[in-house]
Length: 345
Image (tube, rainbow, N blue to C red; front, side, top):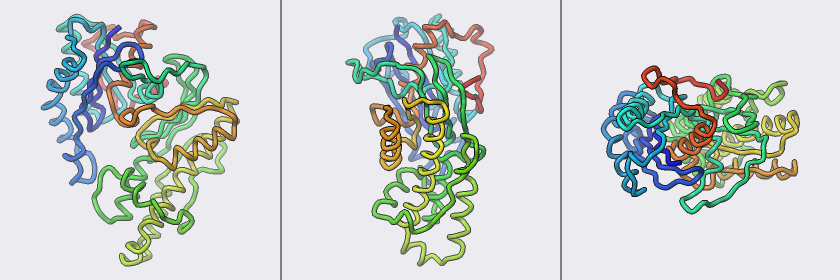
């Protein structure tokens, strides 16, 4: 079963050819340099870049796989969540290809892709990871922070989610505050700044650490950093950049692991899968690995670096299991983007 998958959920024009869990080829056009000077994604620029490059990316992906659209069995596309006008570009292209080549269309939730990113294989079938349900899926990205019960293929229940800013969004904003500059993306920059810093330098709150639910909140943490910086001059900030970065990073990651540990105990599940862009952070991975080991469980992270960010390979793998269950789009003309789509809809 060959699937051509498309993801244009934000600032990456991504296409892949997958066969089951295997990735036969993939191609991505990144817009990071385009948005970098603005300190974040500019929707109109994102849409235009997707439109300009999607045909080329599709073509290159097919060439790499040494195949053509006639030999593809399904077309898959991210329908949400994401940036609405960016999603629309990928959906329109997927519809066009589906109708032109008479291929069934599969709509995939972007967060669903992050769940399956931990099981994606290379073209040779590595790594081989057995599915042993249920899992706690911990999805930590720029726009989402969610704890999800992954009980079977294509079966999800959100146990906890962010009430305002996601962890990645808060990290991006905190990086801009600490550097007093429009930088993007903030996560890798904050991680570098935090190296060698004193994480106890600034005692920031651990949001919702004592709440009786599994939800997250990071807007207050960002506000706390803002008022702390406001009390001091730029000289103090520049002197303590590494300490500030380490302190903020520690507050975010400790709050994440507090909720993960609570979920593991509450649902008696010690198998964890972690996806999303923030999960590439080495300190966060160390904290999660330590926690899961203490609970005598196992944890999977995406096996290849590119799978942490937005990509089409994970969409294709998720689509494979949807195809197995016959979950295809019934009326292609009626399919629409859903910028706030939930994984458990």
